[in-house]
Structures are given as structure tokens and as C-alpha cells.
Image (cartoon, rainbow, N blue to C red; front, top):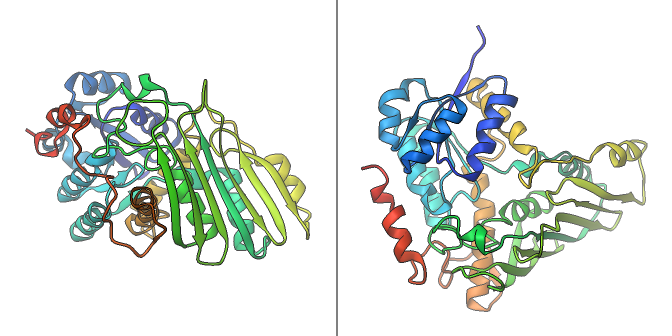
Amino acid sequence: MEQLVNFALLGCGRIARKHARTILNSVPNGRLVAVCDIRKENAEAFGEEYGVPSFDSLDAMMAECGDKIDVVNVLTPTGMHPQHVVDVAAYGKHVVVEKPMALTLADGETMVQACDRAGVRLFVVKQNRYNLPVQRLHEAIQAGRFGKIVMATARVRWCRDQAYYDQDKWRGTWRWDGGVFANQASHHIDLLHWLVGDVDSVFSYTERQLVDIEAEDSGIAVLRFRNGGLGVLEATTAARPKDLEASISIMGEKGTAEIGGYAVNELTTWQFSEPLPEDEEIRNNSNQNPPDVYGFGHVEYLKHVVDVVLEGGPAFVDGIEGMKSLRLISALYESAASGNEVSLRFEPRYSRLGMKMDRRDSDVNIELEASELYK
């Protein structure tokens, strides 16, 4: 008899449809069995759309469907992830959590420890690692084809106007979301670390340019990698009138590669001083045309979750791995707030990421305080 892994979704917002469709259409051993959202009408509409029971609290969902659920996908605003992951782990369920896993290092550690205590797996979604051109690039780096890496650059130039941020009160707030570094660019920050290696220090600037939010819509940073390479990060949601690109480039002593497109999906440059016969095939057959900025990586990522749950073995991106990019994101905010270069071996002092502020947060708190989520 074929083994199945049953998924439930906690949070029925924008990203939830990507998870639901992926599980239903592209993960052969995965099954969607329940959805939950504090906004009852959202949960009911979502459940009706995908033909599964809906609930407005985690407790209610677990009381009725807990014996059927293997994995809960936490798809709520980032600032809620820590409480939700802890709560799900307490029910003995494996957890998939969307990016970034948390907004503070302390919260990230709490999540890892809660899952360890409960004996459940914590999977942090970093689906862009599965993009075909990214996989090709990672393989070439691991094979030493670039030699010494001189510079790595990531650019996220997307359009998110005021209407986007006004969809939900939590968007762009320090406590629940952060800005472009924490939200839109978090996958690309992860790719810089995964492809090139550990970062020693960062220096960054952030600005709020075109929208009325608490956090930044634009930021730039320079990175010093432990292997001696330098990095440049450019991230903005102030591209107008539409998305421009999300790209990453690697330059080394023996080669140069660049992946462009709006979702790190098009291999635009692939050249080496020592070419191999397979290079032509890689150049011709590594591009993907995803329907949205999320790309195709969720399919392979959730298939991997199913494999780990059924067969055991290490998770591709577990809580410890997720903490690496969270530390890098935290250092970027610490540098922007302090005006100093920040070592990755730091304790946050100035960053506002994950902190309660006065500007827009008062209305949000009424709706989103973690203690009010499970009445």
C-alpha cells in the first residue's frame, strides 16, 4: 500500500495557494487534509476551494483532524512563525515554515529547540535552491570550476506598490514582517550564503523610498566572505512599473556565471577558461519560465519533505541551516541601524527587526497578537 504524508496549512494567505496547488497537483505521496486561518471567512473559502475541512484555530483543527495530520505548513506572517512552530511541535507534528523562519535570532533558536524537544522535523522553505540553473551553478562551484571566487552579486528588483502593502496591516511592519531584506530578498540572501560560503562581515544601507511602511523598501550591502571573496546585494521593491529581475552572478578566477529572470530562473552567462563538453547542454537546457516569482522550487522542496518524513535522513534545509541565513539577514539590519560594519558573530543591539513599534503596529496588535490567536 502506498504511503502518504498528510499536510495541513496554517495560514490561508497569498503563499498558501502555492502550497495547496503543489501538494494537490505535484507531490504524488502528499495529501492536503485541512486548512486553518484565524480569519474564519478566509479559512472557509480556502477549504471549499480545495475540498478540505477548514478551521479558525489550531486547537480546533487538531481536535478534529490531528490523528490524520503528519505535517503542518506554517504560512502565517513571519513575526508569528515562532509561536506557531512551537504550538505545532507541541502537538507532535512535523513543521514546514516559510521564509524567513523568524525575525530575531532568539526566536529562531526557540523554534529549533521546540522541535528538537518534541522529536519532530523542522523544514525551512528555501525553494530557490531547487531552481535548475541554481543547481547547475552549485554543482560547478562544488566541483571547483570557478577556482577562487572573486565576487558574488545578488539583485532583487521587484515592484511592490502601496496597494500591496495595504492588503494586510502586518506588511512592512518591524514586528511582523520587516522590509525587503527580510521578506522579498531572503531567498537570494540564502543563495549567496549557500553558493559561496560563510560570511565574515557585512555593511549595509537601507531606505524607505516610495511606500508608507515602517521598514525599508530598498537596501544595498557589501559582504566579505570567509573565503576571501566579496559580495554585493541590491534589493528593492521600488522598481516601477513592474518587476525587473531577481538575479545572481558569480565571478571567479576560472569562470563567470549569471542567472537572471525575475525569479532566478534564466541562465544568461556560463563561461569558463576550461570548458567542458556538457557546457553547451547546460547553457541550452537550464532555463525555466515559472508562472510567478515563487518559481518551481516548491514542488521539489515538498517532495523532499515527503521523502524525509517517510524514509528519514537529513533535511535539505532544517532549522540549523535556516538559522544561517537568518543570522545574515539580522546582521544586515544591525549594520543599517548602527551605521557600522557588523561581524556575523554579533549580538543584536540596534536592529528593529522583530520589535514592536508605534508607527503602524497599534492596529496590527489588536488583530495579530500571538496570545489572541487560539481563543
